[in-house]
Image 1 (cartoon, rainbow, N blue to C red):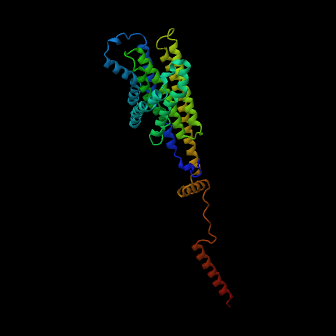
Image 2 (image 1 turned 120 degrees about the vertical axis):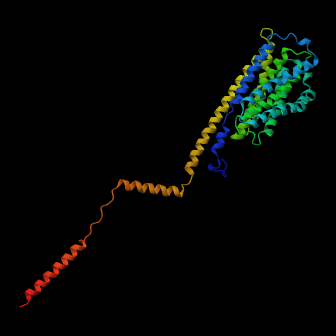
Image 3 (image 1 turned 60 degrees about the horizontal axis):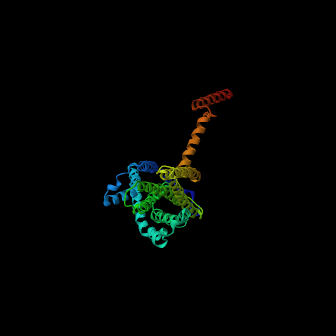
Amino acid sequence: MSPDVSIHDIQPDDLRRIARNRRSFWAALALTAVIILGAGMVAGGGWWGWSQALSETLVWALHVGAAVAPGLVWLGFFALLEREDEGGRRVAFLLWIITAALYLVTVQPLLARVFQLDAWLFMGWWADILADFLIVAPLEMLLVYLILRYGVYPGETMRRLVDGPLFGVASALGAAAIVSLIAVWPNALFTPDDVLVAGERALGYAALGGWLGYALARNRFSRTPGYYLPGVFLLVVSLHALFYALVRGAHALAFAAPLYSGLVTAAILALLSFALLAWRVRKRNRAFLNMAARVEIAQERERPPSLLGDVLQMADARAFEGARTPPPPPPTSPTPPREEDELASLKRSWEALIAEQEEKP
């Protein structure tokens, strides 16, 4: 704590506000993952036999719909479940759109024109992993990080710890929509692969974006070392490469496994990541609540007593002492009452008169 900041400058209510969770976010995330998995399993079941009869315009519309559907489904569930924070819904939608647009004008030209990945990825599976770790993952995750860092981190938009994962998922789903659209766009037909690719990208990018958002939120609301954010970014890039290496490995076993085995692999990895992320958020929220309680106790101890409180305390103490000791008896008068004094004076005068008469001859 800075020497210029005292314990009274910390507001316990602000700490409790940071620790407030968003059940709507986690519920929307779980429902979206289940729907993506279900749609992929249905699509991979072999019921798509009528795609050759579709027009070119309809195929184009289906490509776009399959790419943007995961993000829109998640945003729709979140909007329905989150009724108290209209600003959070609006920011999540804007991040989804902005990330998708910026991906088209920044990351995609770099990958296609500068690095020309399509010209050398044919060399083997190791080239895919190497390109993903050194080029694709750093550029894509850097875009998500920069949008979160300069879009929602500085202002009052990020008010809770869970807002970090929320905005990270929204931004990453925008990038996933464009990545999926670019992957399926060359196809002249709409096939089950379009749905599977869109689902795999959405699940993976949502998990990775959630961790980036969590790291930024924790860095804002608590003290972290200087290497924390770079370390988390390197970890997310590594997970990106590992995630899609495992998904591509599942696709390689398609001859012995269902067509949707890659999507199932992505769903399992994403759900494990979501569960771990929810556990971390809950743990940090408990730490903020405990800190709020300790701050209140410290403020109460250091608060100077009021003058009115001292007066009331002294009055209560005196009343208590008076109730314990009985009042002293009234003092006895050393002189008799006034009537007794007059009788004694009259008696002395009478005795003096008799003595005077006896002395006379």
